[in-house]
Amino acid sequence: MKKRISFFVPLLVGLLGCGDSQPGPDQMQALASGYGLYETHCLNCHGQEGEGLANLIPPLKNSDWILQHPDSVPYIIRHGKQGPMLVNGKRYSLAMPANKILTNEELQMLCNYIRIRFGNAGK
Image (cartoon, rainbow, N blue to C red; front, side, top):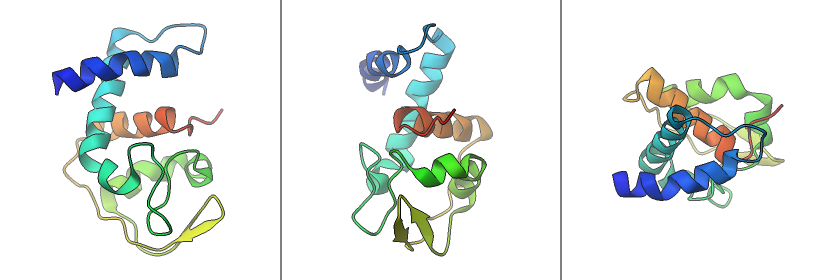
C-alpha cells in the first residue's frame, strides 16, 4: 500500500497544484488515503477514472448529481441507494450497496477524493 501511495502523491500534487498554494503534507496524506479507500470500496463498480459502467452504474467523474447534492454523497456511501437516479441526463436504477464499515474520517477522505479527483469540487 505504501508503494501505491507514494506513486499517487505526485499525481495528487498535480491535481491540487493548480491553485496559488500547495497542499500540506496532511492534506496530501488524506487524499492518498482517499485514493486507497476508493480503490478498495468503489473502483470495481465506478471505474479507475470514475466513468461508471455503461447504463448500469453512474459516473462519478464530472457528475452533475454530485455537484447538485454534495451533502448526500456520504449518506449514500454509508447507507446505499435504491431506486432511480438521473446523472448527466442518463437514468440509472441499479442499487448501490451500503458501506457501513468506513469510519467517519475515512468517509470524509473518500468523499474529498471523489470531489477533487473527478471534477466535482464545485465552487
